[in-house]
Each structure stands twice: as C-alpha cells, then as structure tokens.
Length: 474
Image (cartoon, rainbow, N blue to C red; front, top):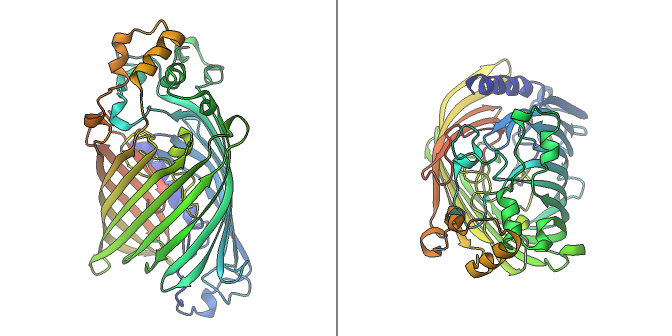
C-alpha cells in the first residue's frame, strides 16, 4: 500500500510539470469575474497550449487508476489571460477494480459572451459497482461475506453489481448581479444495470481464483421484489435542470474566504421500459470558507441535500448526486471519496438524503521549484451522511416474494440482511473522519491524498481507505 501510494504521488507531481499552469481546475466552474492583476508580457500565454499527463490515482472503492488525460487551452491573443477562451479536456482511464472512465469536457466563458458554457460527454463502465442495499443501517453489512480469508466468505462480488453509465450534459449560466447567477442545463443519462457478469470476471482465471456462481445482494433484491423489474436493468433518462447560485469566493481553488450556494431542480423523464420513471429532484448546497489565521488556517464546511420532490425515480437516479456543473467525474450518494470519505461507496442509498463535510485547512509550508510555487497543507476532517427519505421496505411483500422466487432461502437468516425497525436504524447518522494531505502548485493545481475511517464499523470494516485525487473535495 505504501509503495503504491508513493508511486502515485511521484507520478502525479511529475505530470503537473507537463501541464501549463492555469487559473483553476480544468473541470471546475470558474464564475469569479473580478478583475485580475495585469501580467507582465512575458507571463502572458497566447494561442493554443496543451499538456498530457498520466491519469493515475487511488480510491479505496475503485482501486488503482491508470490512463492518460490531456487539457487543451486556447488563449487567443492573450488579452483575457489568465482566463482562457476555450478549454478541451480528454481523459481515458481504467482501475484495477474494473471501473472505467472515458470523458470529454468543453468549457468557455467567451463562446457565448457574458455566459459560461460547458459540455460533458462521458462513458463510465463499472463491472463491480458497489451495492449495499437501501436505507443505510437498515441493510446489514457483513464484511466477512466479501473477504476471501473470512470464515463467512460468500463471494468478493456479493456486494457488487454491474453499472454502465453514458452521460451527456450541457450547462450554461449568466450573471444576475451582486454575486447571484442563473443556471440552466439539459442532458441525458443512460444506465445499463444488472448483477455482476461472473463469466466475464472469471474469464481466463485459474479455478481457485474464480468468483463463485452464487447470488449477490443485487440478485436477492430483484428476487425479493425490492428492485422492480422496470429499474433492475437500467434505462434512458433525458433531463432538464435550472436554478440559482450565489458565489462570492475569493478564488475557485484553495479558497480562503467566501461562500457558494446552489439551489436547483432537475426533472428526469423516462421512456422505453422505464417510461413511467418521471421524477422531480431538488438539490441544495452551501459551502462556506472562514479564514481563521491569515492565509495559514481556513475552516471550510459544506452542507448539502438531495430530495425526491415528486414522481418515481429509479434507485440509480437517486444514487446519482446532481450538480449544476460537472466538476468531478461522478458524484454518488452517499459514501465514498466524493461525499463521505471512509464510508463504503453507495452505503447510504435512499430516495432523499443530506450530508455534511467539515475540515480545517492548514498551510504547513511554502517553497518554489524553478518558477513554480508550491505549498503543502494538512486537512483534518469529519464527514456525515443522513437518510431523510427512506425507501419503504414492506416485510410482508418481501416474504411473499421470497416464497415465490427464492424458496431455498432460509427465512431465519433474513435479519442478517434487513432490520425492519426503522426508528433505530434508518435515520441514524453515519459519521467518518480522517486526515488529508494537499500538495498545490501555483494556487490552482492540487494533488489530494485523503485517509478516512468510519466511526461505526457497520459502514466499513477496513482501515485502508485512501483516496488520491485531483483538487479539493469541495
């Protein structure tokens, strides 16, 4: 583990020197239109620039990531520098736990004068996507069932499913005034969902390394009628969203002060077998950055919620955490490196939820390498997730479906899967905490290494919960 993490850090730092410095994450929304200090002529970039670097990282849920990414910028005659006229981002990567990433993103504040315009086209295959059931603690997590060396071992894929996602999104925003912006967007999400393809996973493996052909939790949910036939295989969902934002942060990366508020609604439609899956979803996010001591210590926190307002959204759309502008490849709720670090990815699946992140950002030291400016920071943090709108798990209906579709299942073992006492399990918050290391170049390019553990082992029995990513989580 230590050798792998060290390699990742070295590779990413080497990659940063291959990329031209810019005033923000290529995939981040930069709505700060305050005048920038004029640069010396020698510092101004003009025309096209690009960089290529390894797309490497580590996620406790997805494994080691390897691939390539490239960011192409067009600065024109340099009159708008450090802003860019066009940004084109390409990435192709795969992980050791069979999660793929193939993405193109376009960003510009000048294609449509006075507006920011984004396009995101992504294909995200995941042969071993985490599936831990519904409503957090109402679904029992038995870590030994997925660990081969455990006496209780069933299959490493027991808490997995297959999920392939195609996404096309285009967003636009415009300034209203006094820090307020309007936002609108449209797109389509295409999901292919199902149990793990064991034939594909086992292909070419020795018999002792093959995964057993047994039902996983996803198969159980289908047989027990918890997952409806319409949603069990995925579907296509065009959508539109719109809302308001407030943003008075001093900068987009390495923010020292200010706040950012997003309030918006997303309407999803369905067609084909999923034609009745129309839904309206509400999202709210509040991020606040409070300077504690000069620029050395900042207290940062985020409060966010996603609620099912109306309709009948399938479970995979409820797991998809909506954003006005795509900043990271994929947000899923709740659990994992983008929402609740240290908690298993998708551990807290529900129709509606809230989460919070709080951390102190300490600047430990600054130094220069050539013309590049670096700083190293430490971030102790605490994360929390909470179910607000649970799925209704009807015990009588589940027992009827077990009798019809899973007659060999021993009903005495049902409490090992589901606890039907909602008051003590569903609404109990999930907490985790840990420490982050940040290495930043030129106040915008951030290598982030976070380590976290849950406060309750029902959320994760492992300790090696390390996430190596680019940029701050929020």
